[in-house]
Length: 206
Image 1: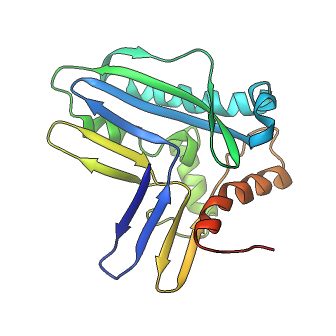
Image 2: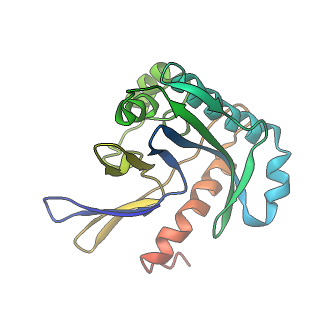
Image 3: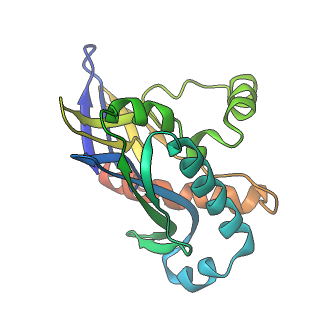
């Protein structure tokens, strides 16, 4: 999901997100649980990682719970797939549902956002902690980007992104911290996630 959004001040928010927040086609509804990350050459280890599977399941459970009441049918695969990107691989569970008659897709999108993958779980307590401890403004990072129509919605989560102002760029990446995380491993994960955007910007980290 590649995007570019221009601000009134001449800035631009650009990125290529691996995560679908929601897509509708009539009453058909789709969303993605994307959480759990490893280098591209360690994909099989990712599938067997208890820590990453637990992190991923928290996102699956949160999305499923938030869809309850908006849908009449919910299909959640029991086992995650692998989503392979250029330098990393994610655990990925595609979730599909059937919206209730008359249900607004945009209302469902608002219920899902922000997902546990970018805000934590449980949401209220996690957001309180982030407001107190995350000492920078995310701006559009982790927001919903896409198109909203009268009958349909297609929105991705604004990840793997950068804010461009003149000849300066702020690159945004993050990682999910759960029991079993270490500062070193999570830092390396953010570096891997930044590689594609840095390369697109022509940045050589040496």
